[in-house]
Structure formats: C-alpha cells, structure tokens
Amino acid sequence: MTGVPGPAADALAALTAVAAPLPRPHLLLTALLVAAVLVLPRAWHVARHGLTIVHEAAHGVVAVLVGRRLAGIRVHSDTSGLTVSRGRPRGPGMVATLLAGYPGPAVVGLGAAALLAQGRAVAVLWGLLLVVALVLVQIRNLYGLWAVLASGAVLAAVTVAAPEGVRVLAAHAVTLLLLAGAPRAVLELARERRRVRRSGRRDVSDAGQLATLTHVPGAVWVLVLLAVCLAALAVGARWLWFAAA
Image (cartoon, rainbow, N blue to C red; front, side):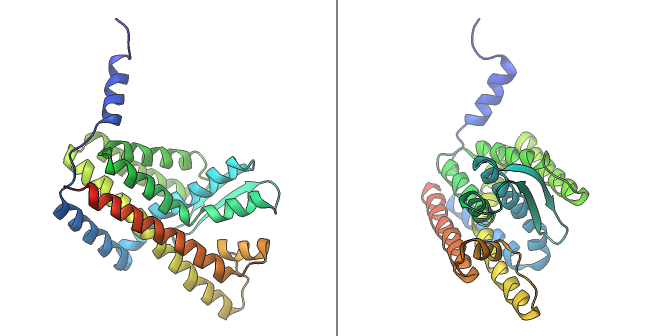
C-alpha cells in the first residue's frame, strides 16, 4: 500500500478537519467571558502572559526575517517581556523588529479568525502550539520557561484530549482574547509612557525606541499600533460572527 502512514494520516486528518459552525449564542457567551477577562485585574494578569508570549514571538520572527540573529526571549512575572536580537542597531530591519510586537497578537488572532471562519478550530490550536514551541527554544529565564511550559501544557491538553466542542470553544476564546487583548495592551503602553514621562525616566518601550530610531513621536507610533490592532479586531470579529451558525 502507498500513502501516508497511519499515525501521520490521523494527525493530518485531525489538523485539516472541519468542525461544525459555532452557534452564535455560544460565540456571544465566549465573547462575554473574554470581556470579563479583559476587565478583571487578576484574570487579565494571567491572560496577559499569553499575549506577551505571542508579542515576543512576533519580535523574534520578524528579527529573523530581516536578517538579525535572535539571541533569546524573556517573559517576566509582571507580564513584560524582552526579545534580544543581534544586528544593525538602526535601519529598516530594526524598525520592523520593534514594530512587530504589539500588532503580533492581533495578526495571529486575525489569522486564527480566518481559519475559524473555515471551521478549522484544531488547526488554530496546533498553530498556537507551534508559536509556543518556537518561543520555548528561545526562552532565557526561569519564569519565562515556567510561563511558556504552562501555556503549552494547557493548549496541548485541549488540543489532544478535549472533545471537539471544547476545542472549538477554546479556539474561539483564545482568538477573541488575542484580538481584543492586543488593543488593550497598546492602551497599557500609552499609560506606562505617561508614567515614565512624569518620572523623568528614559522611555525604553517599543514606541519610545521607535521614536528614537525614526524621529517620529512615540505618541504617533502608539496611535499606529492601536489603529492596526483595532482594525484586526473589527475584521476578525466580523469573520467570526458571519461564520457562526
């Protein structure tokens, strides 16, 4: 016999499986749950680690794409992160690397929404596991290792062991969290920049570094980042709504 071996065929079938559309009442309840996570401080603090992982992954992927050498990623207990790459300290490559972080979760969420609109919830979960795995091999601090492993363990358990309905709900919940959490993170950036200015400290945020490199005010970069994230949220939410039953 020819063809793909049994286990590989099963994995491919699961990856390309098309699930039934999520009922709109379930989508609305999922959206309400995500909204609660966004506004409840403790819940947001936990969920924010997931966005930080994707944020740092976006920095890392773009750094490699523009020819920089990735030197490591850190995720901290206050939900901040740091991606270190080696290369020219100025120029378009560095600008692109800095610019990638905050829109990263929005872009990943938009891609996930496109897959969910086609019923491919399992593909979304495997894609997110791939992001976690890519970050895992670059983690350079113990807390970051714990955060990435914990996130990966939860995702893997849902992807491999959960019933189809749970996987569909989980894929929608994570997608909405990425889409809605991205602009919330940009608003946090704006608040943090105000605190830094009042304290007289140097602004080393992504927007502050972009301002230094491009001579475009950091506030403008914040607006650009917010516009991109809000656009992704609007488009992704529309796709999910019209794909729901």
